[in-house]
Length: 406
Image 1 (cartoon, one colour):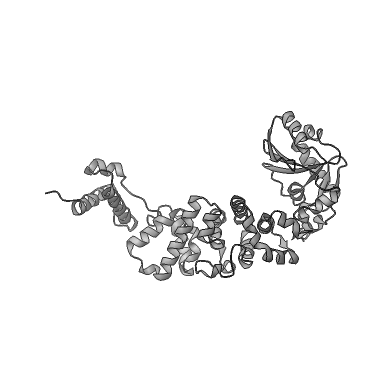
Image 2 (cartoon, helix red, strand yellow; image 1 turned 90 degrees about the horizontal axis):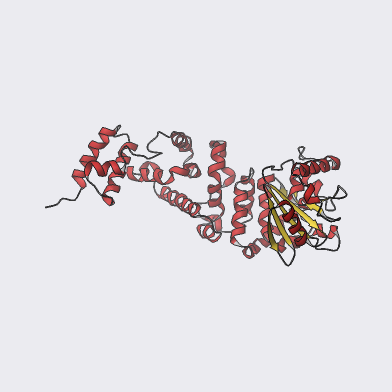
């Protein structure tokens, strides 16, 4: 049971009102008719004591005329208004750090409306005029026991992205998934193909960045949410339950685990399909490239150029690759990578291209690139130590490699 949540109705109502007062809602409440209520993540997060005051998202349901009400509020507080769904009358008002979605009540009763929402934890209503809570689906009890449950599985199929949202709540809130819901997810994972790729991308990013991302991703893999039963037979995919993530510091986990996780639940084709960025696609390709190369060739068997290339290509995100290394190498590699002065793990140069062009009359081109790489490798393997040595070695290299003219 989660003892850190608000469970008393009186306290929850006081916290909601305090939050509304903090956000200066008086001018907004004036335009809301009787029967309007708050619902969704705002109330859930107040109960869980995790409201982000820097970014508040609020859902309001009104009996009717949501667009008209939204326009009046927007004009009054001079904010941006977006019509999200003209037919169903759903609008969004963006005011400073607050995003307010206003929608019409769809069903004939409020209880029926709440039964059409995705999860019980998002189906707790707060009546703005009566100042009372309404919880017909026992969402408060599910919050108390950290349980993700739905009243009707059909509600999830109305928007199949809610299938992924289950794993996001595991990742962000450390919730358990109700047994009936587990069976539903396994049977209906193929419905995700009906969802826009950009929306799936956004949900995956939330999952891999959650505090409990590991638990969520283990479920994603166990349920084979993104593919057939043989998807993870590729040797590139590791057993997430057997990895010692404590080898990374907290800041390293937050920065480098997300790309590792993305690569662990999606193959290359899916990463492109779901519209991931060029940088994420490139990093995933490099993780795969060096994993498979090291499967064929022991690290000790890499020649100097291969080892240099590995660190050159993985330098900016080496901790994302660390779990593909033999266990006995990981600590040493991390320690050396953390040392910014280690010239193998952080390739650099004592000379830049302009200095070389000025001193040796070399133009931009392949020859200059090869010389710079040679000097960087010499520095990485501690075969030169200062500017003068770099100039001397550059002169020698040019004499040996520059084209000879008759």
